[in-house]
Structures are given as structure tokens and as C-alpha cells.
Amino acid sequence: MSGMSLTSASLYDRVQRVIPPIEWPVFSDDIDAILALKRERNAVILAHNYQTPEIFHCVADIVGDSLALARKAMTVEADVIVLAGVHFMAETAKLLNPGKTVLIPDMAAGCSLADSITPEDIRLLRQRYPGVPVVTYVNTSAAVKAESDICCTSGNAKAVVESLGVPRVLMLPDEYLAQNIAAQTDVEIIAWKGHCEVHERFTPADIRELREAHPGITVLAHPECPPEVVAEADFAGSTAAMSDYVGQKKPARVVLMTECSMSDNVAVDHSDVDFIRPCNLCPHMKRITLSNIRTALEKNRYAVTIDASVAVRARLAVERMLAV
Ligand code: 13P
Ligand code: SF4
Image (tube, rainbow, N blue to C red; front, side):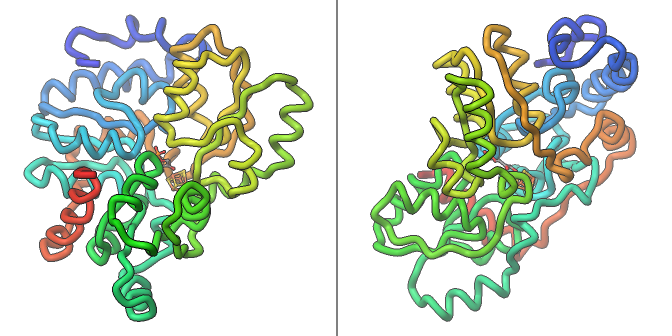
């Protein structure tokens, strides 16, 4: 969305299926202010698929999964990038486009996976498994990326692991993603014990109950879900892969075993698909609001900075991933 001639009034049509009319006045003033601020500051907003619909569909210029946001951040020409997502995503954008001002509207928008591992942990693992390459999920701090050989996302993890041409890799820190990828490849994968606090809560019993209540329902799961959940789903893939699946296969009724806002955002474009929405909120993603995006642009805060010695090594790990 360019935002050039848009106003909140013309945007409501797009989101009316997921935002009740009574809620709209709460958003419209911030939306108009943000559209104007983006022009004034020559700024673009990158929003992850888990952002709420009024952010995702009404003010974002670029939307997508972690991989798409990283790729697109690299080619942004505007002066300012506002990252509507979590801190590691803003760091990745800064790593890939260091000349830009990258703002995150709330510095406390973290991630349970990023919090589960430190650079020191990786150094210890390298001592324990000498010569075994370290593949790090992008859901980590720049300091952790800097200790890694290559990054991956849920969208490219299998390809990244197999690109290394080795029999064994360390894949950190998401234990479930590592186990789900291990089931698809001959490469031996050594995992860590980190979990996504949103996806770890889904259970196989949830899926069985959904299938009983809604016969014929299509179940899509994110690979951060436990392997037992993925095994009972019809398809597992990154947020972008789930969205593409709905667009291509057009299931009559679907459930996305992932963060709440994802179904709202996908439902906007598929009025012919019935979404059942058992919902696990990510408290970190939900720290980003229209109000703090507006303040970020007004007050130029909070600018992401990365120590130069860390950035050089972390960038290499992300660039290696993008080259796969
Ligand atoms: P993807 O959008 O890469 O699938 O990541 C999901 C996620 O949990 C990001 O925080
Ligand atoms: Fe981290 Fe999970 Fe939230 Fe994504 S959904 S930011 S992986 S806690």
C-alpha cells in the first residue's frame, strides 16, 4: 500500500469483515496521522503477519513472514523503516540495511525463543560439538546470530540445513522447529530447548476436538508447534506458506494453529473461506499498536542500534541464509 492518497475512510471497506464498526473510530485518527507522517518522514512500515488488521491492512507498506520482511528490508529506499513486529525483526532489518533509521515502536517487544539462548550458550555448544555448523533461527538476538554460521527461518530451514552438505548440524534455539525439520531430512539435527510461548500451547487434543466439532476442517500448523501437533495437521509451514495454502487450495473451512491475528489478516482476502479461530496471542507482537507506531514516527523512537563488531558477524550469517 503506498498510502499516498489513502485516508482511513477509504480503508474501512477493506477490513470491515474483521473490525466491527464500533471499534473503527478508535483507529481512524491514528491511521490518518500515520499515513501523513509516513509521507513527511519518507518512512515505510514493515509489518509481520501477526500484527493486528488495522496495522497490517491499513498502515503497512510491506507485509509478510520473517523471511519476506528480511528480504524486503534489504531493498527499502525510504529514509526510515518502522518495524511493526518484534525486536529481532527490527535488528535483522538494521543488519541488512544499516544506513536506514530502523524504529521499533516498543523496545520490550521480545520473543521467548530469542530469550532462550545467549552467545555464551553457542560458544559452549561449539566446544561440545567441534566442527558442527551452527544454524540459528532468525528469532534470536544479533549477538547470537554473530556466533552462528548461518541463519534460517521457518520458511527455509530445510533448504538451509541441506545447503551445508554436512551429516550433522546444530539447529538453535527452537526445539520443535528442529524436530519438525529433522523429520524431513537425512541430516542429523542437534536441537536446543527453546520454545515459542504461543505455539507450544497447541496440543494434538486441540486438533482432534476441532475435527470432531467441524468435520472436514483443514488444519494448518506453524512448524514452531510441537511435532505431535504438526503430525495431526494437514499442512505445516511458515506464516506465508499458510497464507499461500489458503489462497491456492481455498479450503471451505480452515483453522490456523498459530497466532490470533494471522486468521484475521488472511480472512480479509478470502471471504469464501470459513475461519475457525482458536486463538493464542503473542504478547510481544501485541505490544505494537497504531498509537505507538504514530509516536515512533513523531518522536523518532526507538532507534535500533547494533554494536559494529556484532553487526559484521551477524550480517554474514543472515546474508548466507539469503543466498541459499
Ligand atoms: P514466520 O513468519 O517466519 O513463519 O515466523 C513466525 C513467528 O513466530 C515469528 O515470530
Ligand atoms: Fe516469538 Fe512466538 Fe511471539 Fe513469534 S509468536 S515473536 S516466535 S513468542
